[in-house]
Image 1 (cartoon, helix red, strand yellow):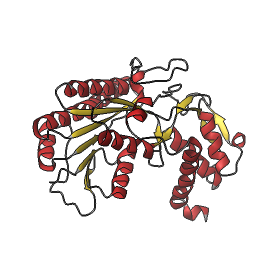
Image 2 (cartoon, one colour; image 1 turned 135 degrees about the vertical axis):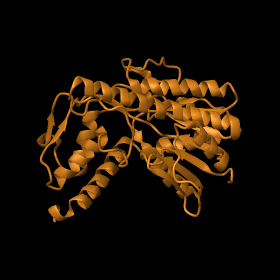
Image 3 (cartoon, helix red, strand yellow; image 1 turned 90 degrees about the vertical axis):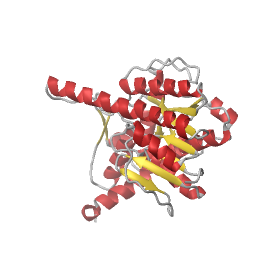
Image 4 (cartoon, one colour; image 1 turned 180 degrees about the horizontal axis):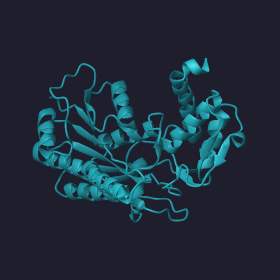
Length: 333
């Protein structure tokens, strides 16, 4: 195939969907690999239906067959909190989560790095890492690429391990750029994430489907930006940076979780205080206080965040209302 192909690993998630849409707008050809199968841009035909990123032979075959110019490794396994149940069941769930997390968050990207080195020399890879590699926040200090990385949970450890593997392959001549992504949001977020829980809850209240939104810490500080801006940053890195490096991708501005909740209610003309109840660990923020410094990527590319915090909340809230109306139209009517 043509080397103009852009390969998206994890095309079914939020970032993958937005990257697909962006490539479609730009008229670029893409192939997406995901848990549920393979997809591609209109007019492009592929001769395979599924690729297991954990299998180095399948990944090697894919890279030889497609010969992509760029690889965006966006696949990720998020570790859920251990729920209530028997101790044996909890241990089994934890072990299964660790195995799956390592396979997707580490082994998969290593398979693609190895395949690039072996079969598609010159291809460029972007690995989507996380601000969780930095661990606990450090009292108002903005996080940059040089900040010490001390992950405090499994997901962050796995992401850091994969970053170290990217560094190892860079030393062997593979173009492996890394983005430490801060909280990036859109309506494509899964419902379990804080921002979706809030806008979905506000939409339900506005439509008369609920009368209460339960939240946790309203004072947690988060660096939020629009996920569509983040995927554009990925493209800028691979397209404009001759040297593969690590890049913090963040807005550089922190907002309290309470700010997000309040603005979502303001978007629909409601007073937050009438509907919000704070309850212990509900919507727990595991990354409170982390604010990023994106100076490096801004100095080597023309990337800048395009959507401000207020616009992000407004857009997500409006889209949530549409989704709730579609799901509950007969009840609302």
